[in-house]
Length: 174
Image (cartoon, rainbow, N blue to C red; front, side):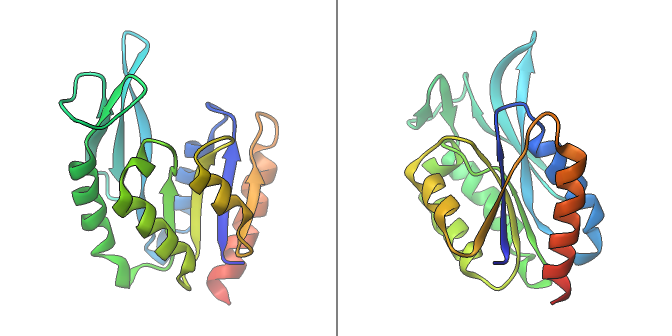
């Protein structure tokens, strides 16, 4: 089981945990991205993705021009797929993948969905965050034999961080 999925309610700290794990395992040259909300006047108006080097791109926004939408957000599929390509080009040097997150908006991209399955099937560890409830693909990932699911709650951050650090270190040093 070399894949780890971190799940939990929205706002519980999945991205924060993924960022901490990125810092802990920086020496293994991880590849992947983080997703964060774009807020205007305290209201969520979009999402942006940021690769592990700090390059950012708008993934979805209420004011984007796109045929693809999820809820009130228009999704920049082409831009997201170009962004993924740039991340995966450094793949040969990486020891693990950090994907924050696999959710409905990202899954609108067929290339992303295919890439996630390829990464989960690879011999390199994948650390991914996913919402508690989601698409059929998210449910399939949780059921895989090679995936360990960790549920994050408001009260177990430190415990999960310690546990994940040990589990991931064992995976990387196998």
